[in-house]
Length: 323
Picture 1 (cartoon, rainbow, N blue to C red):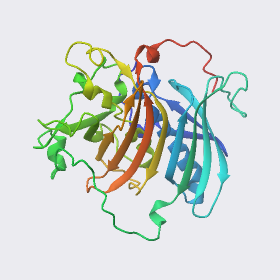
Picture 2: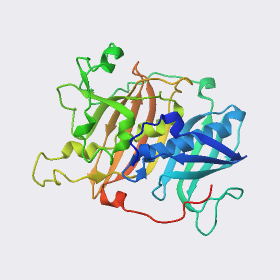
Picture 3: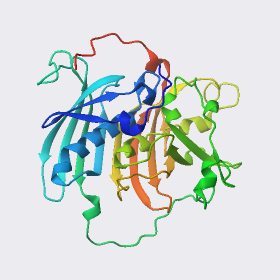
Picture 4: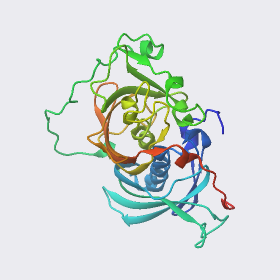
């Protein structure tokens, strides 16, 4: 298992194979256990759609829906895109990510052995050209965040902000090589005070060697599906073992992009994660993403399972393909 840091832009780098087919290599450093993070693979699909619709001037995902059919694995993958409804303002595309039994040339996949891993529907547009009625609402984060936003992000970067402190990843549950996806980012939690509730998590995040763009928002939305960890007992076995390691695979995820991030990217994003019910090994997660000015960037809703880590790390033997 690699401990090498790979920039996010490199990890989601997509190569066009033909007019509707793209290739991506899923990197080990963006895995939880043996499985690439679901949000990371969603970002690979977002990047493929961006390239596919660039010639139409529609590089931005307005909405996205991802269905995770099978667990992906490190290595090559093929993304095939169908133009469901091309339009002047909005275009709808269907994407399928395949692995196993891949070929060097068209048709790129093998009917007998290639497996569908993820399917997605995306509505693509150019958010910078959006025009229309805009009205104020009374929406705000509720309950109120446990700490005010930093006034000086340079202080936050130096871990000197009075209200936010860098999270020590070594304290996270599970060995470092299991949760290595997290090692690509810095996370900052309220300093010296609890979150507003166990079911609500507020944090700031930044990449260690990249910036956030629209394509990275899939990964951002799924960067911290760890609400269950707030319930972890210091010792004993209520409601679960203090040393039990979980895997939180994403079953389905939606993304509603409210405003585009600049093409050059941004360094900081703030997240609010909240679960409404954690029941029978399944949790819902609403994720609000805001920028440094507090503007809403994206809303994501997802469903995650709660499984033992042994379901993730089991060895798999098969032909990964020739591509």
